[in-house]
Image 1: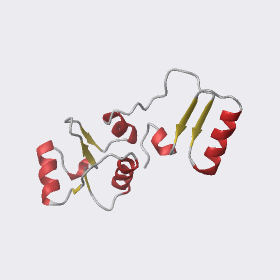
Image 2: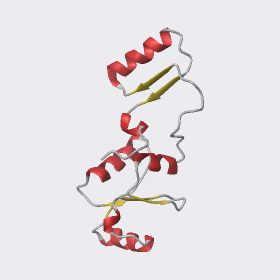
Image 3: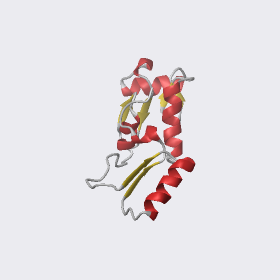
Length: 123
């Protein structure tokens, strides 16, 4: 990942990768290594955070959903009907899950964080 610091968007992408146990490296865009990498990719510092993958995929200022898709995560729910959908964690999310299971709900969809569930940009 290449980006400027401090930057809320860089922090958010780094947090997303860390929470999902994705190993990554970070280069400041204004460092010699970061500038050289951006030049090789044909980008500049104004491109926003740049995430590159070992597969060759390069994302400039990507949304969380774009990063997840590039990692191979299925970001769309399966084509089925869910009995309960829980977005969020903590005591309320746990209580809702337990309640749903006790009421006989067979299919549940759980998203730990609302920002990971939304396909749009969180700025």
